[in-house]
Length: 329
Ligand SMILES: *[C@@H]1O[C@H](CO)[C@@H](O)[C@H](O)[C@H]1NC(C)=O
Image (cartoon, rainbow, N blue to C red; front, side):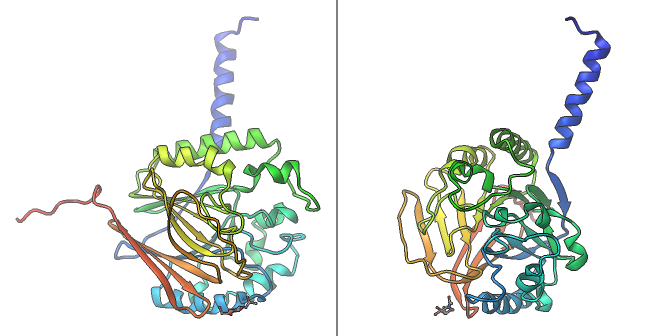
């Protein structure tokens, strides 16, 4: 059946509307007056204070104060063992509000979901009604935080892992809003690719729950290496930050500038496993702790801290490509 020009126009509008609807949500965050940004990154934490969660939280509060942080990133597995049962689950207060009480941590928390969060009522954590209980909690599936020097791309990685769908064993995953898997993944990859391409920020940082490269218990996530990593490489992403493995680690990609940082030491740790991979392992700590990230237009500083707030590892990276050369006047 031949379509009239009017019908084709209508179809185009529908397609455009669909494309617009598929775009990732964007939030804006201001830099400090000196043009810097300071954040803490913690993952795999919600255990009502147990397994040193409270100790890590106390040290985050002290380091957060020292650095005067702008916000906190959670790399997921926000509530163990099975996410939240609903928006009225007391675990929200017991594992979040009543634990991260320090003044310096009363900043926005940008959170992604982990696989354990999918084992409860997944929509509860995404429900903005939680912000009435604690306004810090900003959790979405995949979204972008824009600043003048860095764009953060938060990606929901749990649906990538095929075995959760095909072989969940005794675990139940709440796939509302993401099934069917293939459609969800292809849309997300498309959205991330175009957002990364359009980004003009000096730094492009991708955050997800699952590992890409890891020497700890879970190791690499093959689905992410196959599907997500090529998009990061093609668009010049600087870092991929994740949790999932309950440790702190830094791995450098051997065939791209990408740096992999795992910050998954928010509570239970000490798995005692080590499996090397072909990329360059720079740092690995199998215990509890967290990470700070300090950024200016020219420099990124990463620091890992343990449960006592002691510095375990520091790493810096500079960028010259965007530097404005100063000439004598
Ligand atoms: C708490 O941290 C200390 C110091 O790292 C460690 O020795 C201890 O095993 C941790 N406790 C738990 C329950 O993980």
